[in-house]
Length: 427
Image 1 (cartoon, helix red, strand yellow):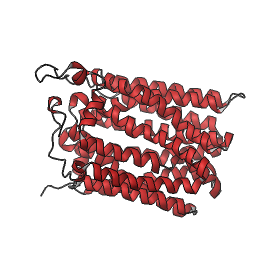
Image 2 (cartoon, one colour):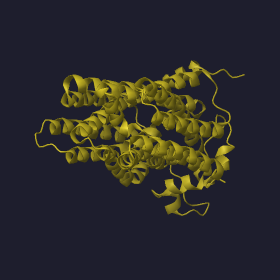
Image 3 (cartoon, helix red, strand yellow):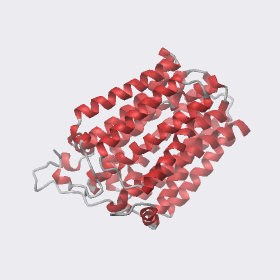
Image 4 (tube, helix red, strand yellow):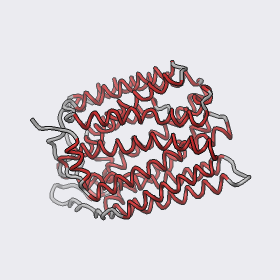
């Protein structure tokens, strides 16, 4: 029997370009997670309005979606490291803008929203380039371990980022906190410069199978590919609607305020899901990949919905921390499983475009979900809005399980190779 464990992890970490990519991604995520907490607490302190918190996510999502499709097309046809480095440079500019605005006596939330929009633009290009870089750098045979490392690095940063951001905000204020964001992003850019270039994969010829250039090479082909593949569509739809309805991050400042735990407590509430996710990631490093992939994904999102309902019914800070940690554990299973499905079913020449579509479904759903959470909390009240989100997550699982039997019956992925682009749509 094949043995699984940290030997596979070390095989991934031996790859120099991936190692530098992972370090760059960890520091960049630290910076963005800190920045997200600082902005949300700053906006809430200025407005005390749940809708104002939700608008942070909406602004970023609108800009992300507007550019994501073209960004994925661009990433497939250009060198990936350069795209990542340029976007990190733009995020450094955003950190400077937050510092200058915070020191300005005429600051209003509208100026903060404008910089948030710039971060959405940068993220729309960074997302597909980063995913394509990771997937093209690591051999397919050990990619599930790379996906687990990616998720673990993100979760570790999601623990330290909010906790550190909340601590610095409470200690020295938002200007110093934004300064720390700048330093962390600069470190991320340094590691990016140490990554080797990854040039575009050869693009498939539209001649030979009767496929038109628009379908085979156009920037909308990522959507065509995803919507023609029921397994990928089911997986990312499941995660999108779970995050859209079940996410509670946007309204955690309100919960922290009601519990009387302040910015530090908010940092720990934001970090708790990542603590659980790291525990699950370590467990997954020791065990073989899940064999019943589809059922595992459906079960994980079901438990996630139940944790949202439990969070709504609890008013204790410590119980909420444990519930959020459990939600992070099952979310880690979902994240790694979805990433492995995308890697197994996507041709190399389309990774940027498919990653962009995934980003629109998943990445922007975090921000649109933040808006939904803020709007629902304003209209329904805090507890009813969270209960509604948890129930809708369970409804989503039932609908996807019913409408996507190919996903429900999906088994092992570790022996599967990505199809040639000319073989899709997949039936």
